[in-house]
Structures are given as structure tokens and as C-alpha cells.
Length: 441
Image 1: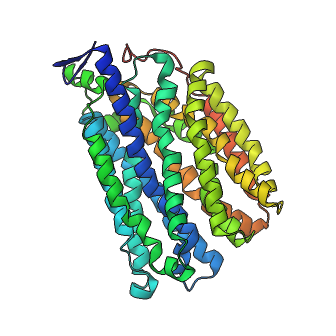
Image 2: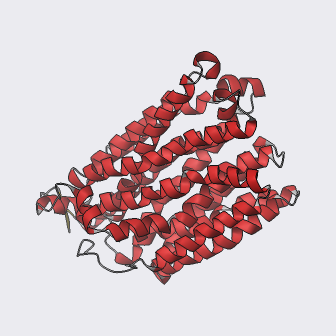
Image 3: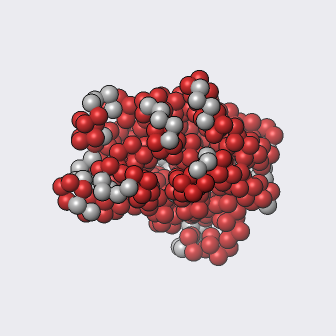
């Protein structure tokens, strides 16, 4: 029997299962909404922001400037992890998740209102940068809470990989919704879409936030945090404590994400710049291809999490790193083939190697930290990768192609990321199937 809120409300096994399902659904839907907001910005960056906010720059320079603003959101993610990780370990997972959803949604809605260069000059880009930073803070605090909200309701040590993978499932959902929204409104004439059509998907974020808040308000705090409250084990300065006591785990978590995060943003964001600018592919064709890839991830992410419960978290993760390191060369070879079928297939399959890592990743990282410091430690380790991997990836890819004139230079970058991940993952402890300090009994 599980108790919550200081042991005052006992839950039967059936009630516990109901709460587990609600927590998983609330985490997954809320995360999907947050990633819709984040990916929407990513998709539109490659399509219109360079033209609207840097119209007088050389096309390549304008693209780099637009991706620089895009990268600001990744720099902000560790800031969000530090802020909300602290409060997530101090006041609880649920309250923090409600705050991150509000922050992210309102910032995304505000993007729809930003005037372009023609209206207020460079100040449009400045406002966009501030809003992107706020987006990054919101999503930086979201991941840790959503994963823990699901994982800390799990009683079975042999199912944590699968259960923790469901909030990860929110990523392809958000990617699907973002690309679908852009695809739908890009059916307008090019002039209309560039003028005001791109703003509508951002404005729709406000409706999604309302849905997410309604769902999250109805869930209970996790048994793990309730137990910490009841036993007065809540740390007063969890972020400082976890940095002092677990620096190795934080850094390994960040470096382990190199092969997962950097290629992801090359496959889902840089592909629009390379596909449209270099290969002269149509925008809609690429949007459909990325949509198809995100649908495939609906299967491959939870499946990878489930397999990690069977063969081990590290083994599954390292298999994914090896696969993505090789696939980068295959991917660009297929893109450069000139065959519409092979290009579509390359994009369609591109997220599978990523998902082999992303499925077990939540449990792999979260299991590395004790319950009273888990939100802070897992969030910080996870989001630090944004600074060294996700944020710079489209910038590095654009710069490498501009310098060498070959997409295989970008594939070499993906391979280097895979090598870093393999080394970091080999040094991590695998807690697959093991009880963590009695918190999952």
C-alpha cells in the first residue's frame, strides 16, 4: 500500500495503478505540448526567421544569425534546470511542472506577436532572443519533472525503462504537431505565410497550454517525494548539494547525450536548411518526411525503453551510439543521391538510431541520482548537453558545410559525438532492475 502527502492518504494497489496511469498520461501530454512549443520555433527558424529578422544579411550569414538566436534556447536550458530542479526537489514535482508549462506556453504565444525587421529593425531579433531564452528556461525545467512524475510512481524495478520512456514519447509528439501545424499553414501563398501565416501555430500554443494545465492539475505528488516530505529529508539547497556530491554523474549524463542530441537537431532542423538551400527540395516534402519520422518514433522510443529493461540500460544506449555514428554517413549519402525515394527514406529512418538512446535515456540518467536530489541532478546533467550538443549542432553543421562544401563533414561531426557518448556511457553505472535506496519498494 502506498501513502502520499506525509502518509495521510493510503492508496490500495488498484488506486496506485490508476495514479501511475494518470501520471504517465499527464507527463506525456504536458511534455508533448512543451516540445511542440520548442520544436515549432526550431522548424520556423530554418524556414522564415532569416528572411524576416535579418533581411539584409547574406543568405548564409542570415541563416547563421537565425540559428544563433535558436541556440539561445539551449543555453537557457541549464538555467531552467537549475531553477526548477531546485524547486522540484524542494516543493515537489507537480507544482514545478505546472510552472514550467505556463512559462513555456506564454513565451511561445508571445513569439506570434513579435514585429519583424521591417517594423522595428533589429529590436525584433532582440525580442525574439529574449522569448527564446524564456522558452529554454521552461523546457529546461520540464524534462526532469515529467520523467520523475512517471518513474517515481513505478513499483516494479524491471519496468522503469519503459515507464520513464513515455515522457520521452512527448518529443516525437511535439515534433509531429509542430511540423503538422507549419505544414498546414504553409499551404497559404508564400507571401501570406511569410507575412503572417507562420504566426498562427505559435498563437495556438495558448489553447494547448490550457489543455495541459487541466490535465496536470488533477495528478497527485509522487510517493517518493511524499516520503521525503514525511521523513523530513528534503534538502534545503538540492542544486548546490548535487553539484558538490555528484559532479561526475552530472558531467557523464551530459556527455552521454552527445550522440543523441546533436544528431537529432541535424536530422530535424538543419535538414530544412540543407534540403531546401542546397538540394533544392520542396519545403512540404521535407515537412512530410519529418512528420513520418516522428510517427515512427511513437514506436521506437517506448520499444527501446522496454528493451533496456531486458538487456540493460547501458547496453541498449551504447548500441544506439554506434548505430548513429555509422548512420550519419549513410544518411547524407541517401540525401545526396538525388532519388526522392531514398531522400524520404533517409529522413524517415533518421530518428531510429536516436530513439535507441532516447528511450532508455530518462531512466539511465535519473537512476544515477538519489531521490532527494534527483530532480536537480538529472535535470542539470540532461540540460547541460543542450549547451555542448543540441544548441550548437545546426550552427556547426552549417559552418562545416560552408567551409568544406561536403555534407560528409557533418557526418564526421556526428561520428565524433558518438565516440564521446560511448566513452561517457561506459563510465556510468547501470541500475537496470535494481532497487534505488528502497524508493521503489
